[in-house]
Amino acid sequence: MANKTFSSLAKGAYNAGTAYTVGDFVTSAGSSYACILNSTNNVPTNATYWALLASVGSTGSTGSTGSTGSTGATGPQGIQGVTGDTGSTGSTGSTGSTGSTGSTGSQGDKAGLRYNFSTTTTDSDPGAGVFRYNNATIASVTSIFIDLTDQGAVDFTSYIDSWDDSTNTVKGYLEIKSNDNADTTVNVWRVDSWTTATGYRKLGVTFISGVLPANAEACTISFNRAGDKGTDGAGTGDVVGPASSVDNSIVRFNSTTGKLIQGYTSGAPTVSDTGDVSFAGKLAFAEGTTDTNGIDFGGDVTLYRSAADTLRTDDDLQVGANKVLLQASAGNVWVAGALNNISTANNASIAPSTTGITIKRNIADANTTLAVTQTHASSTGEILTLANSGGVVSSFSQTGILAVPTIELGHASDTTLSRSAAGVLAVEGVVIPSISSTNTLTNKRITRRVVVTTQSATPTINTNNTDISQITALAQAITSFTTNLSGTPVAGDYLMIQITDNGTARALTFGASFAATTVALPTTTVINTMLRVGFQRNNANTVWDCIASV
Image 1 (cartoon, rainbow, N blue to C red):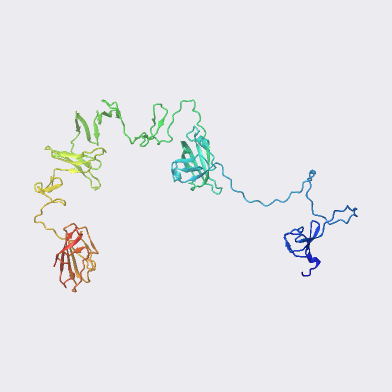
Image 2 (tube, rainbow, N blue to C red):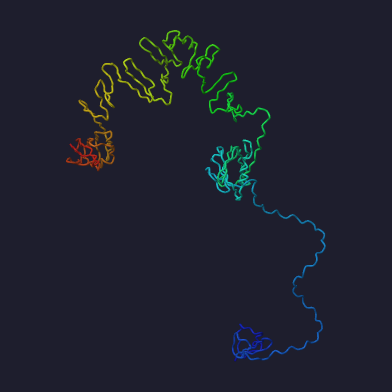
């Protein structure tokens, strides 16, 4: 074993985690031990690894007390003792300086019920804590829809239902504000009515002022109730009228109580300050056989209704300065003077003569017409009928149809236009062919539509307005007659294309809209010679068949 010093062998108190080698000695429970075999985690009482050097002795008797030593250093502070009794209050010290201002607290809610606004205008429950208007234009809003619970889920049904408790026609006023302190806008409404609905209420309102809130904007709603209607007075003056009226209009009653005055939907009759009566309706008089029911003019001339659709006067009626209608006898009216020209304000006249009655319009204004008008909406018959003693009748219908047996154009014996059959006209008995009729034409010539076509590699031809297409001075090959071909031909239509070059033979390509038959499609022009190519429409194959090439 290597030499070791005493200090290196003394390991102090035994530690189970220390690796000991032979010769090391330790203390344990007051005894000393020497390591005889290298050991880790073997207690000193294990004789395999340790040898007892000295056992702990028994405790000796207590010796006499020594003299007091000098005071040692102050030890650490002990634990706090129990609190003693409170001493008397000392005098108040001087006030300290004011501390710095703390940060601004969060905004509190404004007064009122807390609801969010919705821009939806549908009449339905807006949802918990939400209200909406029935129109996106605030001035046109007539209803507000409000849920029964606010944003805090508090049920305000009883409170909202009290908003129509006032017996006044105006129930109160509603103020709707933004719940943001920075937003000072206010909606003010007059509440006129209240209607219950499942989960929400409908308020009939009149807009007073404000702007439309933003969608989902947090708002507060405050209601100011109107006072109840006061008790009626003790007098009999309890007549109730409409909210507004037309100036100078004639008062009329609603029902038989004598207490309700009603207005007019339109055309209110009025009496001016000078006594003039104006009205848009009509005067209705009870039917009578005398002049007791009607309009009296100065006490001696009365117009009255004597029977249905009959206006009667038992006096003479003067029209103009000199024309007077007189009752001659039953069913007859005379005119004081000859009835030879009764003119109206626009110079139209009715003038009887020995040969008939002439209706004239004597005015230079081209916009003035003489009209016979049927104004009744349900009338379906003729508004003007002309007949002679032989029963020949001409008429003009409500729908604008003129019906006459024949029309004489110029001389009555050689140009008479008449109806030969349904949809068929005739002149002097000879049928006039129409677009849809089937007729044989004799000695009639059909003039072909000849169109000069601008020469190009793809000529433009419209078969709706072309029978013969003429191309002259062709200066390049034609690569396709099909490219710019248009029109809606019918089966059997004919088309001729005439081509003349500019002194140089030019190649010709007709394209898919043209087809050879027993006659081949030409492929080139003949120098300085008109080439004529004829086609007939073949709608079955949607092509133009070549039937001639010369």
